[in-house]
Length: 250
Length: 250
View (spheres, rainbow over the protein chains, first blue to last red):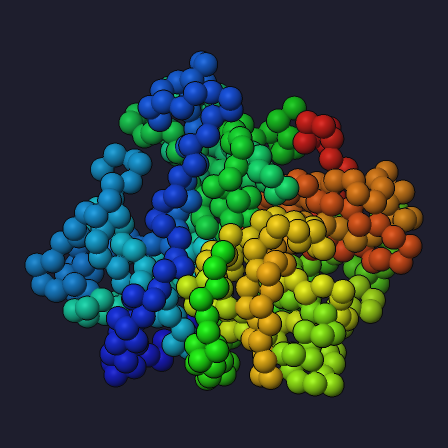
């Protein structure tokens, strides 16, 4: 993938992006969660309801993770990420900062949210619709598995960064703690099925990777395409099942 | 839903849309089909392969259907739709014409393809991502079931049309002829499941309505969100099953 964006073009794009900020309101929120538990009263999302863990399904809109070094290049020497909104998982947040992403042939996404805290590598997570719009053929990968993936240019108010790789479509996954994993009969690295019942557009998602540890809250992450395909916000029921070899839970 | 777009605003939008035509290349094609049959050699899409009908799954990108009257208002007195590309179903085509769609708060989609032939009612079919971008809360409906749905403004080179209703997210459906329906053990109006096997993002779509008649070719229509959620273009296997009460085919 060859990048042909030079400095003056980037400056023009930045100006264009800054002008468009106030009219750009079509991007989905970073995490519009739907916590639905079949027939159970809602309560603390950590509660077990009727002996079952209370399941939250969140839509991750396009976002990026940055290294400390890239934060300083993009936002100025000495800059750090400023938390704007806490995510459901403890310790993670949507930062106040956004970056512009420039793909090949000068297509761009004007304001992509940065999530914190910083990481040892920078990574851009897009839905497939975003990646088509940007002209980047992003492969489905789990977070951190970015070897051989395409790159892009990130542009901030203080500078720009060329990522040689790191553009992915994040694979579906579910965070949970080890007690919840034991309840489902699964272990870290297993695959599950997510069943979404939604009026006239129910969907079963296979290939939901279990990411279990001691402290995570039970939460599925899907992207905007997946959330829109099943109209998640209007879903009447969500459930999670271990994958069987035939893809059927019966 | 109140429309606040006046004539001068529409003219400004038209000029803006015309200027943007040459840079707008991110919209998905009207029908990017994936004809995949499990392990079978490909042949004529109408062929039965190994005793099974050869299944085609097509992505319908956002598009609209127009009445004869609306074609004349939008494109000029005496205008008719000009076929540009035949669709897979005999007698249907993507027209050369496109319209601009204007939603509330002056958001717009600059060039939405018109499909022919004309119909007794005008209708705009969007994916959910499109409808979020346009600011219209489009309900999932089957084609023609547009009572109580939101409207929009359509703008063409010769004039504009205010639709009081007709904006929908088209519900998944499958066209087939009566012989194929008999093979599947289903009838017109029944529901089926569409199973898409795709690397790391397999999906089962419920609620696929059977539209059976004497002549239709076997073809599932899903929208761009659904196609992107399962990366249809890279799918390794697609299959269609009657819906069972439990949503499982076993």
